[in-house]
Image 1 (cartoon, rainbow, N blue to C red):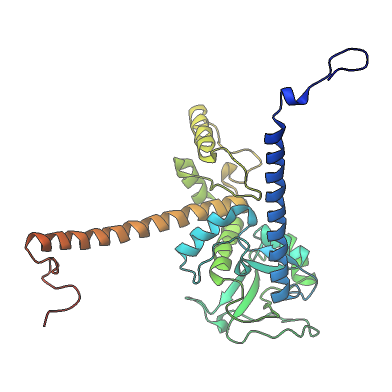
Image 2: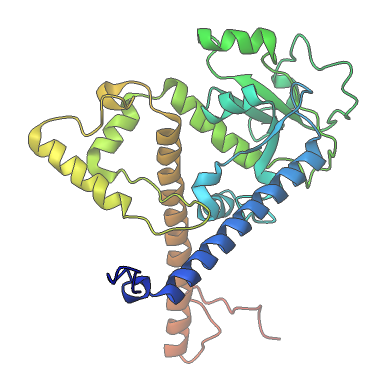
Length: 322
């Protein structure tokens, strides 16, 4: 471009391929639009099912049980490990959400409160005491008959939670839903997973620290929308641990509750449980493969003996021949 005084101006096309830049902007806008649509759909689904905060009957916010930042991969792994049927493939699934007022939402995300679903494999409905003030009399949503979703304050000795107990929702208050069909309610397995994370956050200390210091710690890769490239967190973590071991210092910052063996943070608790879940899945797959290998070996032995229908125990697959 030639300016009026004869000087040569900046030619953007000479250093930037405008077609590539335009395509990147279009893709970014499309991803952002898709993410916004997913968030809106999630809020609308939770609103239709819960109508308002399930514990206080106040205006509520759609809250993810497994945090949105953990992504689809995390909830798919949990769905497989906990044998959830039908399986959950989307972090924005209705069963991964619950409506809470803004104060409860904050406490829930910090793992200061959790939701216990009964009956379960250990507890019956009657094993959990009722709250002194079970619900708002003006709340006309139907009560659940065969199960309970009970709000529990994890550490009743925490002074920060006294105002929650007295001003918002008492301990052991049960939830109420507008649509109480069992197939649409929040998934109990996910709520219990978060319950375990809340226990770790409130009381977990040295066990997690020792496990991290062993070098087996790995922070799961988080997913955000729109999806972007990210560095390998495991490599950075291992480098940090190696440098700290060489220098004889703590690998964790002074701000981290893991430093010095203090309580762990909410995210660290989820990382810890995620690693346990991935190991359990690996052990299960290993056992299934071992069983499959035994069946293959039995079939190969049968082929060598001229009778591929028999196993090593001499039994014919599919029943005896008439």
